[in-house]
Length: 204
Figure 1 (tube, rainbow, N blue to C red):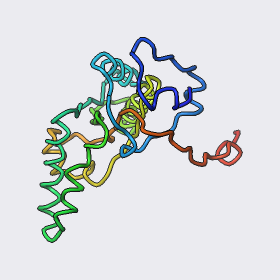
Figure 2: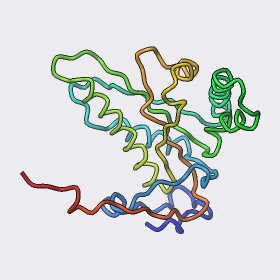
Figure 3: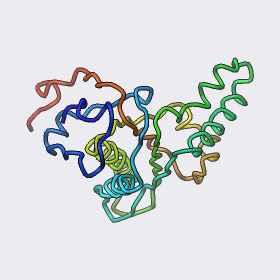
Figure 4: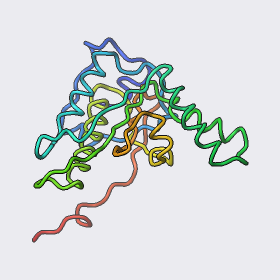
């Protein structure tokens, strides 16, 4: 489904055509948060996105992930946490740099944090549980794209900083698989070069 079908003004929810699944997966591309605007997903669409995010391979039914929704003032509060940690660890940083950190989650109207954690299990190694969290992030990106929004899965220094994670409410044994930024695209997003299958596929 071409981006021009929705980027200027999103139609009513019930009027949004559902793209062909295979074509969507073949053509999906990320949209930079700075190229997003409102509106973001409605409450019903957000529930759909999160439901699809939770429907991923999960060996042992461990549910080794959870979601944090940042929208409205929540994005600003998260930005204050990021800026405060940045300023403390970079005491000589210009005020402009601190302001950049404060606005990290402000471009898109909705940001979903995917929290990853592992549980001891005799048959499911930690790495496999972490991969499940990654699959959850990808499902969120795909679901948002299918609903006509732009989506981008990002991290950044603050996604790996323990003080920031503590400030965002993560437990000591939890990590962030990343932030998925979701919003209405302001312009068509250019694709990037993709690998040739001949370069990445072998047969055993």
